Amino acid sequence: MSTDPSPPYPALFAAFAVLALVLTGLFLGLGQFGMGIPLQGAVFPLPTALLMARRMPWGAYGLLPVAALAAAIGGYGPLDGALFGGITATGIVLGRSLALGRPYGVVLTQVTLALTIVTSAGLMFHWDAWRAQAIDARHEAEEQLEAIQGASEPSQREEARIELVVWLYGHWDAIGLGLAGAAVVLASFGMLALVAFWLGLTREARPPGERLRDIRPPDALVWPVIGAGLLWLAHARWPDAGFHVYSWNALIVLSAIYWLNGLLITIHALCVYKVRPFVRALLFVAMAYLGALPALAPVGLFDTWLDFRGRIDQAAAARDGAQSGGGGQDGGS
Image 1 (tube, one colour):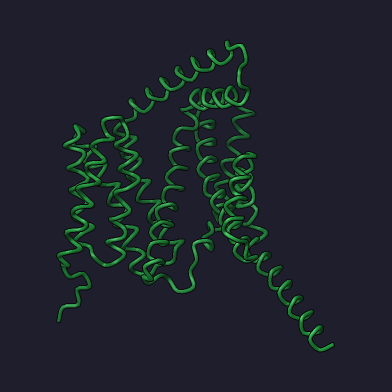
Image 2 (cartoon, rainbow, N blue to C red):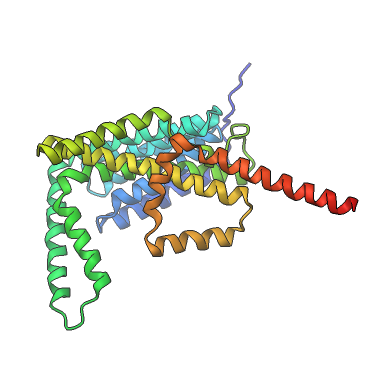
């Protein structure tokens, strides 16, 4: 007796075929302006993950050749076609893991590893072009900085922003891979969050009792942080290119992981104390405007020892107990 959970629904298949054509058209159109890869990474894995999570693998696997074909029609080479197919395949990893009911932390780890492999392959194939693009971007930023400094009333904020860009591209060899790794971590969580949110709206099954804000890095991850910090100190004492590259890139990736943990801790606190969504959004906008968002990284790091979620839950439970006790006393008096 067949137990295939994914029968070929004709109407649904037609809908996703149309979606694939639309995505291909957008991909080709924006690809003319050098935006093909960002668009590919942003949209193709999501419908693939949703199809797999809803146990419709025929549609998910069908998007793989569509992605590769879009690359071929757009004038990209076979290696880029394989790269685009690989990016799309990360959606299969995400959807399959969710369909199996694995915890969100495990799902995020698997998706991050898959996307890291694809990204590493892409950087290996395009390493020279990637570095040349960074050099061109630095020269362009330097020209913008000279124009701003030569203006009669230069904007200090704009000048500071351009100086940061010049510094970043000037140290690209030491931080470029780390920034790519940080982007992989955040993109992986973004895909997981979007797919999980959609499955929640459609009341699809999810891991019992699991919440995205409960994801936290393993405690053992603090040892790579300590190792990278020691390499950074060693470079300060005994300057070495290897120490410089390894320590900076590793610290950037680890900072992204702990920044994400700090963000989830903040969201957990806002949810536990039942802060309204509008106020939550206003808080994050204010933090971004004031430049306070990087402070979430040390919060996420020190959670290894302080268990902020547990402390928040205990404080909220104590407050609720005090309020209920006070209410009972008032009612009895």
